[in-house]
Image: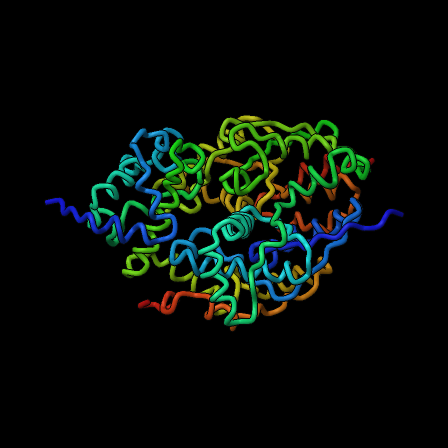
Length: 160
Length: 297
């Protein structure tokens, strides 16, 4: 049974970029050059936006949602004649999923890395040696204490 | 000698902490083009345009705005050397300059650490500095060893070009900027069928990314180039070690050396190859370096 909850559209519209789903007239321009659609039997940005229009929250916001197959290539943003920017709607949906603790481990580990080290790459001994060999200055520690005040409370926690 | 122009480089995590040879190649080549790099203190990760943004967009914009605010305080444009960093910083700059409500929300957070986003500087990918400020002719003037007969296939990837209204680098369907940069150092640029297509790095599915990589690498191999040239460390990560990974998955023998544009420029400018770290690349550019040595005579 498909559950339709049109209030879901209001909640989506409160997210940055989420309100754009209202503009979609289902032309399918976003599908033609979609990198994920080219390689997936299921991923289809037009259908994702249709499901938002129909308020099919349970189909979108769930563990292992199909939405994470989006390659983030921004081609749909370029193609859409209505300014829906399907990728922005998808990012808004991802933010809703992170709030519900449905985001993949890769998301959580990047946040942990940024919060703890200020970077997404580890400064190991090999890199330090290579920098020295190239005559580059040693890397300074980024001011990580300035990051948490800029972040949504709880977004960094393993159960946040 | 003409006065040096100043730019503030934003190298980001991948270049600083994984591929310092790219940082070195930018630092070696830009002074010859008349540019002084001004290193600003206090940058953090841009932050990551895919995973971090997927968690919370406002937090992502706020951290990007903090990095931009550092450039604003120094009254200097921020020049990015990675397409991913450009994606985060250019979008934040573009959005926050236009969306007053979002700017207020971001500044409320930045206020907690004594910072403010004002919208007074530009964020630019270094490729556009090379085209618009330095100019192709000036690049050619600094070349000591023109890479004659050198076949260089180029790959744009996604975030250098899209979304075009934010990235402001080139036409997203028919770009020419990399082709022209390669011509400027005397090499022969080769297009390939999949040049603007996505490598799948950010697609969270086990089966799809290898197929995407296979198609792009096959398309590159088809041109029989001396090397594959990129202008983004994440693309490099995908295609250098990525060829070795794909060889295991598909029982293939992809072996095209991969270089960051500024490494190629450094070689053409006659800079010591030891300073651009090609020896650390997974696909060893042995034949490629021999060819360069022959050109240098």
